[in-house]
Length: 536
Ligand code: ISL
Ligand code: CA
Image (cartoon, rainbow, N blue to C red; front, top):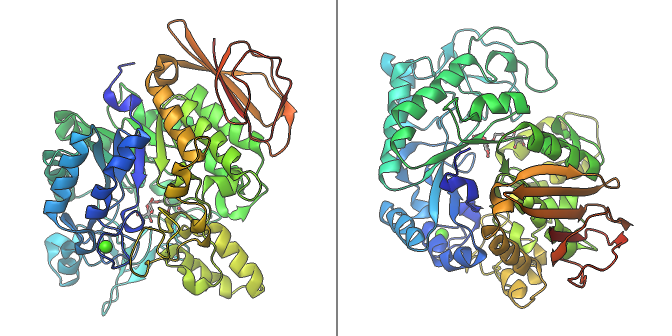
């Protein structure tokens, strides 16, 4: 395996709308991000993944792009963007951007010209007289009627996100051009949105599927692999950059086809299997969280994939401390345990803004407080079912992507230090005590733990590149060793909310989160969410 720079990068994901507002309009922006670069540098991140900042009507918060080469005015100007790349670079921080090429916004010029009847642009999308039975990722059907015509168009996501036709060479060329545009500005790669569904084999009728009827016609098709190889050869291979694919519904075998070093498609992928440890396939079908299920999913990917893009949170998922920890009784300990989990596994770690201070799920009270298009769709669908309002809201609040999108909590002032104005999405009331300023005062706090472990990892060949090997332990305790050229690090994590017996490991304790004396004392019982990291 080559030791490219991105393998030992520490990636910090920024959701620009919610990170830092510089002008009081309630929306985070690029000057806001620039003002926090010192914070990101101090954390130890070496790369920022910037969620979309392109021009967009924001029906899906920027994942519906109306101009791929323009910065959304809410976020600032192209000069601001260039300054961000430059000022981050001065701190040794690279920037990767979101590449959303399965679909555009319906307000993109291509789609508008298609609707106006221009043949060339008609072929950029899928227009059909009859719609098939495919389902949309956001609930409901994947086809909507073209206004004023007896025609339908395909959208795997919201109706404001028509799918691009990847059979059309013009589409391919346009996207190559867009990628070069940003790479030439000095960005270091892309996080590729739903990149394993872009190429549709056919528009035939789909087999019935709980939510995504039709998926067999577009998931991980050979044509999709071929496009990725071509994009790699024609564009990416000419730059010092990397790609991480957001690849829905893949198992390690399919993941390896997308990121195998010899395949020359993507460099790494985000798997979803570990995100299914508290639901059945889809988040709507809840089941109780069991640490053991999270462990076995992670362990499987660690064993079966040469490299992983490790993450526990992003802008689509609930907050990990609310989900896999105990935000009420052990917020600090469980957030630190999750930090160690993310940073000690083999692969490139991705940290989502606010994760490093243990931010929790939103404290929503009314459906009207939610802004996410997916939640709005689901709310509409749920209203048709004979369930109580309380039940409907419970389901919405548990699943809404807005849980991760509440404004970053910098301090305890009215706007959380995020804005001087009214935030676009309700700020969590717990910003009074869950905030960066407060964390800065605790040497044993969550933020300090992140900084400490990131710094430790940077100096550890074993954590950066070592092999992974799981060790025997009690249920819900995850113990594994990472070794490289005789250096060995052992991580022992009690992921249970109760005490559990410590596995037998030998080594020198170097990092811990529950006041353990840093020595080799007999360790018999681990406290809830206790972390111990040893050198052997
Ligand atoms: O979050 C999900 C369900 O709640 C996923 O199914 C999600 O829609 C899927 O992972 C694709 O996500 C990506 O593409 C979407 C966008 O809305 C998400 O924010 C993005 O991460 C469409 O572009
Ligand atoms: Ca702003």
